[in-house]
Length: 543
Image (tube, rainbow, N blue to C red; front, side, top):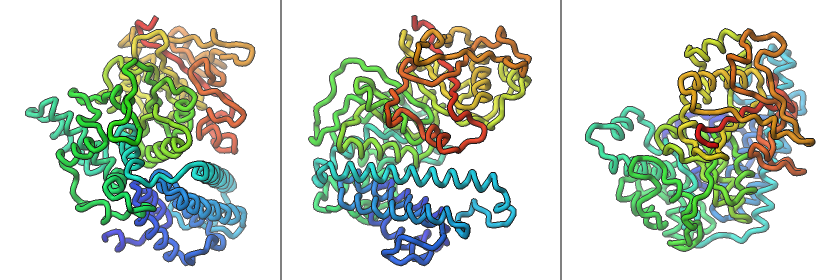
């Protein structure tokens, strides 16, 4: 009700509709889309709007989000129709992008003549917008192909399977009424709080996040009311009290309904990785579980849109994978991708975790529980941090670190969580040489205080006639007064491949990341378009 009093711009509509689709509230999303179109003068059946590039792009985005929700819920015909509308709006947006009289309603875009005169900014914006539309079109076409191959899932059994997938393959460690940090810490860490109580509290938060933010409420409603087909879900239909968080008893009932009594959290508050991945995803209330045989578990931190880790999981079904991403919208997109693809081919060996990497490593993963970590194209603190050798020397010697994911605490936590096995690895790939040097300096800092935490892996020895990894001297070209004796961490130049655990790159380049495609389209000013800089470490005691 309060939202109706606010005046939304295009970005606000796009964001709110995407959130509704993420929660599988399809009827609410449809109503908001019509409200958006009416607010900006688009007739109900219209797919063009003169030269309003941002509006048509946003409508392409929200119809694709709606298609994802329909596909997850098994409403294939509705998903195909939403994809067609997304593609039509994308075509309109491309036409507007090429027009000299195009404009934008988004707050971040300025309409001053000064911006129009800034050719570099205009060119960069055009490249990015064109790339975004290409991503939308590719995904929409993929969803259409999958929907045409699959039967509609309209039974309570299909809903139960989706509920099990949500509870075991999507773990969001914040949100859903859990964002009051002070109260959360008091609840978890209070002096009278037992381990059993912490276990229940964490499990309750996860279920609430799934229930209100990621569609579990709609799926539970579908389990008990399977006649609602196609599943046009609105908040008043799926939640008796949408402003009240689920209590412990209600959470336990949901877990019991999908055959997961006790949940997926151990008594010490860490994730029960075996139970997560061993839980079957069949249609029955107690589907067949996986054998107790130990399997490798590999983790990608900062998984982004999930391109890389999803392909890895598809290529290696004998290994379990975990995608860790902070942004909720990206978490939802990765889950949607696995759920949609699973309609035609099972992807049961990937769990998506939403939350801060540092908190996950420190609180939710047990020591020596993960076989390998991968970090692909991590975000640098700035595009050129690392050009000053004095800054790097300061970091190596314990000075203040810039804000970025791969700080010394994260590096040390990964070293502790890695299994002490010969094949265990920490693999970091970046396209920014300066940031690669900062990461090397950060690892060197860790090794100064914990010399046996990690060891170098000389991947130049893995070189062959098709691939050559070249060592990058830290003080090359005289730009640094840090010699290689003080910097023992090795960084290599080359293309990541199967020898360091990367997916195979076929003719469709499916092993690449979102950033690989962006650079190929011409984006990125401080990144190397083709060259990659690689750091590989292994845990102590792994030989």
